[in-house]
Structure formats: structure tokens, C-alpha cells
Picture 1 (tube, helix red, strand yellow):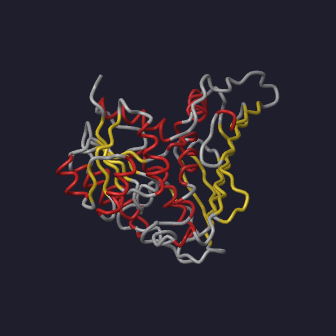
Picture 2 (cartoon, one colour):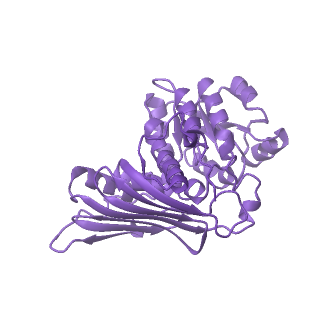
Picture 3 (tube, helix red, strand yellow):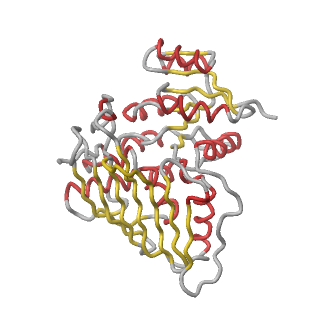
Length: 354
């Protein structure tokens, strides 16, 4: 049995307490949380006492030098992700970073540039990919068993009241990077791309309709994929009835997923096309979408020294599409994949005029 992977948590807030630490504790033979870093040493010590973590610090660089963790779990606000991820990678630690990965493609590319062949690598938390429903459907689509994809709808219609935006970094271009597409809908967008592959072009609109914030609170888009399939993408923080919904119409069947923050096989429905007698559904196993599913794969990849999923170009796809959505919303133009690079103002910031 190999020794456990030594993990340092950066950012002891709600997501670390409610999700990350309970997830780490489910893999006691693989994971040992050895350190926490927070905005102040007092905050770090409070988190360390709650979770019985031996090292607490308010200084990331000092912790990296002293503790030398194998994996750094970044659960801090988005504006800190680039600096913290790069520091961890340069210190030789792998990175698991909460969404959104960072504020811009420029920042993401700086993180990727700090990776090295064979590791360390930086993987983004995109747990919706890792449920058995999504993995089974992806294999069916890739095999051609379902025929061509035609139409998709990707919906993240959630509700966030004004108190939610009272947290100083939320709803601001310089600290959250964007509105609900960036902070809420990125998980469903990533799942859409996981299933339908590369997108080709996008048109979009965005608006600030109700919340007293800098960013938008509604974003909509029309997306054409390389396969020819067309999709609508809707993200909002203003929907009293909350749902995360994904629908994909293919030649052989329609697949729909309705959930909120996570799903199991029962949250999917499969409707065969007329004349289609048998679809290989449901999946043979029922694994819910979760941080745990992704973490298991990350542990295996770290031990093997191979690139994990949701890192490098694979982790960049969702951020590139969201960036293109904002550029399209600002300019009224169709934006194509690969169009936004150094020299384009949207490469370094998603800020638009609302």
C-alpha cells in the first residue's frame, strides 16, 4: 500500500468545510490532510482545530516550503486562484482547484505554463462529469450508437438573493470574473462540452436585471458545435424555481438530466426515437456526480504521474466558451473557438458594459 497523498487546503471557507474536507475523509488510505492556509493565521488555526489538521498558516509560500505537500486543494475566492496555483505548481505540488478556475484565459494559461511533463498538474473541480450517467452517455455518443447529436439545451437557473452578493468578492469583475455563467453555470456548461465535444461558434446576450452588482445576473447563448449540433445555454441567479437541466436530442434518443447540485442515474431520462427498440440505458452502475468521483481519479493520476482530466486544454474548454459568450454579448458578433488570444481584451478580462 503506497503512503497517503499529503494534502494542503487553501481557503477554509464554506466549500472546504461542507464538501472538500468530508470528501477527503472518505479516502483515509489515500489522503492525509496535513496543512491549511487561510487569509489569516487565526482563521487557519480555527479550521485546523475543527478538522484536526497539524499545520495552520496564513502564508502559502511558507507552508509550501515547510510542509512540502503532494497536493494543494484550492478553495479560495477566484481572484486568488492563479497566484496560489502557480505557487503550488512551482513548489512541486499538484493542484486541485475549485471553479471558476480563475478570472481569465490569460490567468488560466499562466497556470498551465507552470505545469511540467509528468506532473505537477493543475486539475479544475468539474465534478458533474464524473457521475455514471454522464460517463455512460459520453461513451454511447462517442461510439456512434446514438447517431448524430442535433439539439441541446443547457440550463442553470438558480436563485441567489441580495444577501448572497453581500460577500465582498461576489458580483464583481475583478474578484469573481463574471456573472452566473462563470460562478454558477460553469458546471453544466462543462458537462455539455463533455458530452458534445468541441464547440465551433457562439452568439450571446447578457444583462443585469435585478441584483445590485457589477456583473450580469442573466446570460444566454446560442452555440454551434463542430458536429453541427446547435445548443442554447441559459444561466441566471434570478430563478425562484431552481434547476440544473440538460437535454440532448440525438438521432436515436433524447436524454434529459434534471437536478440541482448533483445527480444520480434516477435523475436522467431516456426517450428512444420512434422505431428505435432498444437503447443501452441506464448505466450498468449508479455512481452519483461528486467531488469524490473526481478525487478518486485524481489520486490515481497523481500516483501514476499522468495528466488528470479537467487539466490543461481539457480544463480550459468551459472557460473559453464562457469568455466567448461575454465577448459576443459585448460586441454583438459571432465568436469562434480559438479566436480569443493575447492582444484581445477579453483574453485578460471578461468585463462587459451592461
